[in-house]
Length: 514
Image 1 (tube, rainbow, N blue to C red):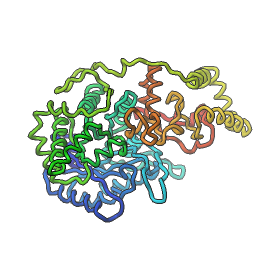
Image 2 (cartoon, helix red, strand yellow):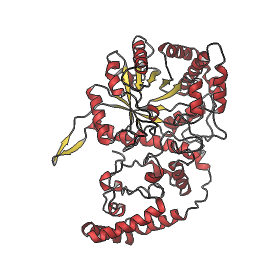
Image 3 (tube, rainbow, N blue to C red):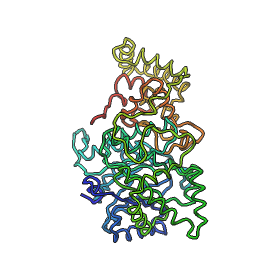
Image 4 (cartoon, rainbow, N blue to C red):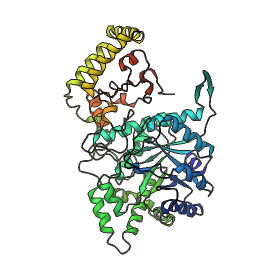
């Protein structure tokens, strides 16, 4: 068992990991910087695990899979990030199996940022899977996947991956915040072995995250909090929304700019801020810290860790310092005590006390009526359409007629993309294929902006914020916790109605609890 996995599972104190970002190209200063950090870390006692990102920020970069074996040879343990944005499920399986051949078994699975740049134009995003379904996929690899080869069933050799997921608690509107916790529950159910938070500068958000996991869910899953050594340049980019999911308030940006006027250009202030954050994470009961930052140096990390040890008894005071938020931020729990982690399981949850509001959508109510009449088992309409679907499957004329009618209706109402593995019902009649750039079927990505706006289209509300509002109106938020299998591309441009009634689509595949 590697030192990272054993330190988390055996509760060997507070675990420190450091994130490294490979640059573009196979040689050069960015690659040298990664190896220099790894070499220096290999001779230190404080840092035993590093992680390598996978095309972070939507930019092309040298694959972490190439750098990984060389870093392992230095004596460090390693976490490889696996992003869903650039590969379909077959390519992801091949890549993950290759990592196992290299004895790299610590993974951090992320959905990934939308592509930002590429040679000869913006590349096509893939997002065939999301972080939830890929966690489930890798968990099944650990058990041994059942496959069919040449009409014969076979079982692949079990793997031994230690599966990590991210949680993004630094969201400031109700819909985004609650849906991140809903997705967190899915990731745990799908098979995540440990969690790492997104970076942020609000101690209360860190607090509610660990409280939600430990006391609301009753889970003992290891959780590491991200600590980003914030420079003025990074602060400016995060403040403007250029780095998906990373928020820096105007107040924090101004503070960092002021620190830059010091003789050391604000370096000491950056290091002390990171040390204070680690002290807060320790005080709140996190399992460890995941240290990040541009041009991260081993000596800086050692200084941060040493300072945090000296400061750890003062963490309640530092807690109060980290309150960099937008105006009127939403918090899931309204009664958390500063300076002590609540033990009660029954909390005053702000979300459930909100008014349901009025759902002013004729399309929603019309589709809801149609669903009740025809798409629910044991109703006369369901039986009729199931019979028609069986006939249409064998009768080409009836199939084309039914499909033409379906396409005309759904294209007009929902901008249908003809996936024909339709998620409209599960998402309260909002389409992830036409309204979400990443086609997210299991909850929002972590890249949404302040106010619940989309990562890719900043003037649009995130699809899942709109889904949440409708779920609250119907008092059915719990239904959003179901894990949905990825889209079956074999059904493309067939008929979602026929596929539904004949159980060919995702509704005929239930992976929950498996």
